[in-house]
Image (cartoon, rainbow, N blue to C red):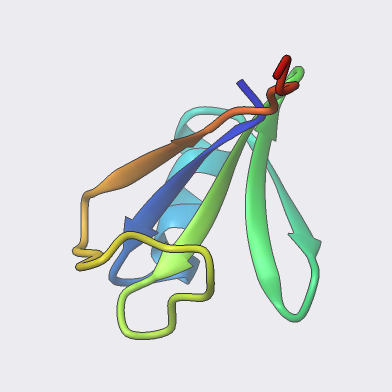
Length: 74
């Protein structure tokens, strides 16, 4: 697994929760985006109404996408 993308209503509040309560490190990347890191694991945060491609057809708060890195063997 490469990362989990979590759609939330308020990125700032989620960053506070995940960093203070769960000890994850908030990492800014890209064009103002935020990710949460713990060890080798990463959660990218998407804000409802400000999603970017690729994204789910109908992203909603509380939904998540698993993102894998694969190699096609065909």
